[in-house]
Length: 239
Image (cartoon, rainbow, N blue to C red):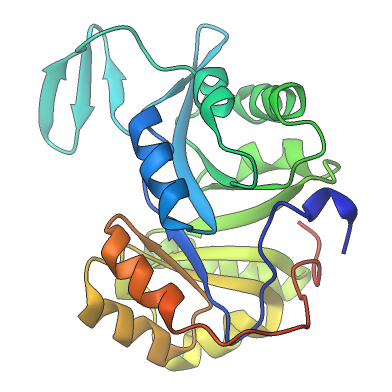
């Protein structure tokens, strides 16, 4: 395993990753997620006028669109470098690339190298073209995200061509057979969104080895069940 990945957790089938959804989107949430001991703090990043903004909502002029809710900005935007500066030592992030700006991937790769040189991180997106910027970045582990059946069919075709490090799939699309197929070609199979302990039990029974959840108590339940292992597996596949 490359030394640059010492900040990322070891991974084995009995050690599923605990990923705190949106806990990289606010500095206060970074602190809470890090204190809980999760493996990855997920953050949503858009490129806007050459800067990287951390937010889940989409810009619509002077407004932000969150689902079907439209609201005004509550203050200046939070930038990626601000979050990375607040990241405690030993914590790792998963950057979810949002939007369609073609330079998002390159800007994030540059920002990560500047703020956290040599520290490993994961990067994901449903806009897979943005992930190409990380193909030659040794610190990055690339995760292909899927939120629809159409995207899932595309993913299965891609996995037939070459394995990937990780995939992140909407929970409702998963079943045991599919997870088995994905585990043959991807080192990490993540389920999102896992809202409660009942859903946690369901996805673990399917065989996923990564859980994306906003509720830290659910993630604490996951981490409390881990079986320790001396066999690191993080670097099985490249991105």
